[in-house]
Image 1 (cartoon, helix red, strand yellow):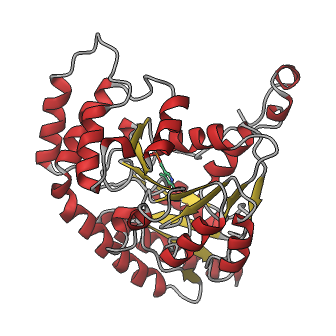
Image 2 (cartoon, protein in one colour):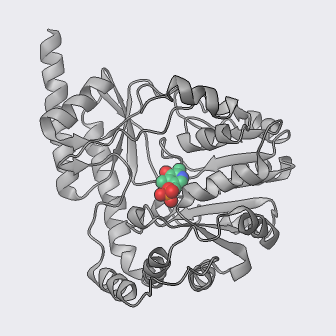
Length: 368
Ligand SMILES: *Cc1c(COP(=O)(O)O)cnc(C)c1O
């Protein structure tokens, strides 16, 4: 379903007539490095704790609307109070609710593309005009002064740190400048924060900037994309807004139970996160060896952005000839000829490096 039928185009709200549903272009493959999931097995102790929690969860009662047990555990971890946390059915739901509550017609959202495409999509659903402060086309660095000026006229600013898909951090000094400049609210999306160096989180700024909120998810480092759990850390009156607009039962009992077990066992993930970070550097070095045919940007997340001639064809061959799925960004503004590769297990990373080298050799050969 790429677009709505003519009949439905006439019946839906006019601003939705041209909508194109998000398509992750998923194809079943031997190796899936397309969605930045954690491809490592769950630590066995975590899996056991989750299984035990699920078995003990009654299904006949509605969930606790606010996920208070999970909230308390997250609050302990992040050194805040329960009233500073809102749990949701994935980080995506929080981004949608952000637009619902603070966006809308005649208001302004500022984002810094290339970034997470869902921001613009959710903004469009609630008719929020998006003001794009494009990153430096070569380095993808944020353009600080332009951004701060844009923040001055914004109801919402979203910064992604580490950014998806470029992998870089938003400097904390810049986050502070944006918070000071913006009369509305500022979201720092730290979906990949666990993979970044210590001290990079904007959470350290929450006490000083009451309009700041920080988004997290269990979909990436926690290896739990399937359960749909995300959360927001912010001032309590911001959390009250999210509590008011959210669908009360969006976080089901199984998700609450599994997420609580995982967050309680958070220390058990350390080895996996360290392995992914070290594999990221190894994969980066392997991709650099394919230069100058491949350009790779430094990343603080669990993926790498790469650019190469005929990227869409390379991606197709990876999928069809090697059963390896990566994400094609070559048609996205500012990301011409770019692919995004999730950091996988050592075996998966070796496979993608070998396949890429072969495809690039074949393409060179074919051009002769
Ligand atoms: C994955 C991701 C999220 C949240 O994903 P959920 O699975 O909905 O929790 C949020 N922001 C960015 C930038 C992401 O890549």
